[in-house]
Length: 206
Image 1 (cartoon, rainbow, N blue to C red):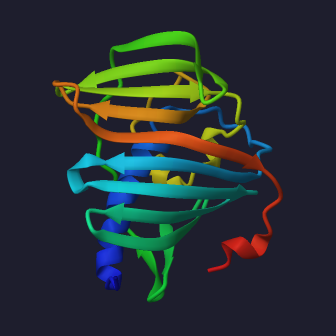
Image 2: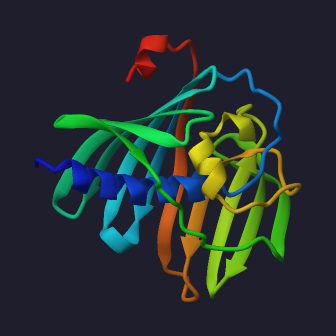
């Protein structure tokens, strides 16, 4: 199916908001990480009947996120390139490329009371589980220090828009669930794989 750039941009805004929720729910240490490689997630979004695979390539402050998504009977693929300090996103799809700025996230909770469980195993990693409540929703993260990513590795666009939970954790979420008051799953993210390897700088070419 062919999408107009504007349609892709709207989809990007929704997916980026989801990624802010997924990747930006905790505040990390500011030390530069040594991780270089590819992290793969599966994500769901019940509101648009979407299932997506996200491949996140990271190396030396460069980020490329490749999306392979299906929403209902529609499918689309595109990529987003963001430096750690960029204020905009460079989008590439099979119908063209463009710079997109001014994308804002959606605040789904505020930092406040939370439930914390330590020493929880998830996807083969030692994690802590953090559950937050906001407007009747339960937002739960499984967070690990085992991958080695830090807050400063996230694109600035995400850091600017995500909720601040400084001091709660130093890890990166490998699993997330957002449920409503009835327990229905609204959004989710789960780690598929972590591959630590060298990434050629041409991968991040705009």
